[in-house]
Image (cartoon, rainbow, N blue to C red; front, side, top):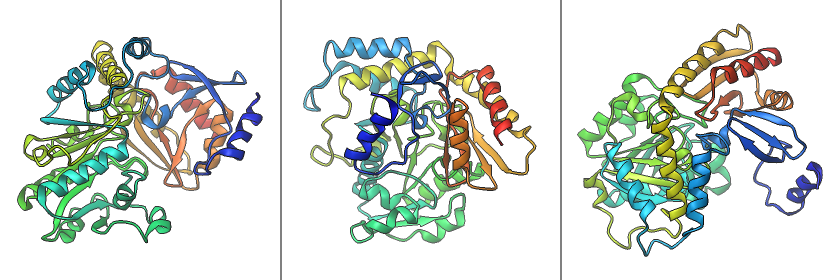
Length: 386
């Protein structure tokens, strides 16, 4: 079947929830993907910051193949070795004490909110405008986009308060005696790649310690090296009570998780929360392979070197259409003075995959293995198209 015949299947049978690019991708290698018509693209999007090691990474593929030949799924009723090994490895790399495996970022955030409410016995959650925490009804309420709320207001849970991002006074003013938690992205992704002031997360941490409020960081997009440290909150020298993660954790397989301190995690007892697929042997084998590659190939060093280079090259583009360049590591936004959708389309036709978020911000979240040569190729094309 050709591209148009395949796309027609979606038109005829899928529930209409996505506006897709008219490309049917077939295979990938490293930082490049190829569609069924043989067109090759430099992947600057990495499956929305998921494919951290790019495509067809030999160690990741082998880990998945080997585990698939042994066990794919056994449920959460039994122990499995990859999940146990990964838990210890990840906890040893962070300031947290306990882990819960989930399937996605939304599920991880939902579980984190439940844990905070159970721990505190309170029912209000403060989140930020332009945040993105998921598409379930509860995480949608935490997500600070009014347009996403509108169709579902009649069934959305109460107790969620959205305040402006990077505004400590707004948080202080929103706190009540019933505030259970503050949930925040260390760097906003969907909202337009907004990097907060240095003191912002430290201020939230101090407020939470003073008021007995649970401090949750949503590292679904910013985690696993995306911003130059294993988790982005490390850039701001804070120690949250709970951290959520997904996307890059498995390099392409669907996986998420919650990390929490011992004190907070102890609020959950058997029956309070659960999962059927979370922490299965297949996804945890993949996650272990990701950590192996991070260590063996100095992935974080590459993120910092190439990410810094990428930002500096973008800042050299002297054009009236560019309003701002911002980001950390390989999570970068190029804000335009006009809508950006047409440039996503033009770049795709030129052989580059990106996306536009917040209406006018071109978002670049390529595989963490990308090189300066790849960046030069992309920036040259971007310069010409802009």
